[in-house]
Length: 83
Image (cartoon, rainbow, N blue to C red):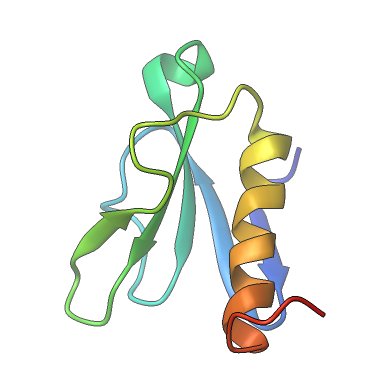
């Protein structure tokens, strides 16, 4: 799987478990325990604050986490309405 993705003009970056390399506005797919503990989805805000978007639920695969963040971006683009 590629490390960098883009969806509707938004950047999505796979990382080894740290959001510190993300730039403001980017989404991150973070490996929990090297991926053995699952994958978490985060967003880095304009002031550098990082918010975990899937609460304490971890995705089993990076593909599942990527699909989740793409759905979030789709909802943001449509104002929360399903197409």
